[in-house]
Length: 486
Image (cartoon, rainbow, N blue to C red; front, side, top):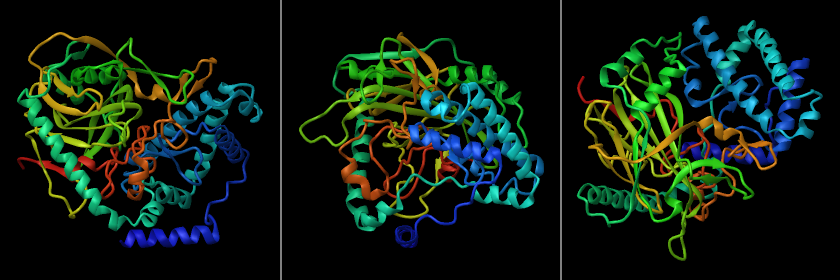
């Protein structure tokens, strides 16, 4: 309630006084270059929302994981420098995609010959501004203070929607979904689900055994921040090892996953001729260590309508599956969401146990099933329902043959080819895939989640209606799971 009251005051202040307190841009040519570039990007609607632009530092961006280091690095110059390197890399990557997607007329307005020149100028200006900023203790302190990524909840909506009153019907609905999910997992495990065509998809290649997987991480160095410095080859080996098998109940083409493509529609389409799993390397903090996370995402063309009033049907659907590895490359916790951030479920191994929720009435850690610890050479099978694309069961593979799927990098979605030979992000400047809205947004807006049910970009997944939780929170696993043995 205190946070909501503060939000209400902030909203009133915003309407009365406008947006005050922003740092004026530094009066250099390079500062002006970034202002021009950002204005062109905003005019064209090609802002990349995966990482947060740090106010006053136009050459740096942050995600929630890197922002969590801001207190840790204050008194360690070497760690601070490595931290800034990583913040700069996020901005460099985002600007490269923004410039790829920038229309030619907007590019010309910057006074540069082509995109490569713009990228080179951004890099040179970033180096110049960084040298000036890091030479001043006050600027270093300001950077640490401002590197705080806003959450993906609207306090204004929670105030106007009388959120405290809305929590009762929300709790009833969430409890109903959890009970139905537990029943579906029970039925799937007991082979009581309706018979139908199940299509199996599996990765190419062979997984590493436990000792080989451990060796991959054992030989991986870390910098001052403790983040594993995996080579591209080692990342590929880990992704191949822990890649799941998908068994999907298939009624029609809406149950086939594939590669996102731009056609003539307002939303991307899905090319199912080549089943594709998008992969992303991520990290989390756990008991003083940085753990590797392997993220696998599949996309379906649509969640079909069921009945006259269907709140959750709409264009595009999918499943995001994540494996959190311990320092020995053994799975610790699995968890899943849909790309809307909805239906967050955790599947801990026997090596951890769920911590109690710190407060009643919030979504904490819904666990439909726990899993034993097994050799990585035994793949996990994800059992997925037709039409809803809900995960309804998990089991370890006992053999079988399926259609091969292929990997693509998740960042490819930030610049997809278009029919006219240009590129366009799958995501809008707000991090939401256009034209994927659901009717449920009119029901759930008091939760503070904007455009509830729409598909989202990595880094923009709010996963709780009750409380606040993000899929990429750096302490998500640590807060919810402790070792089952000391």
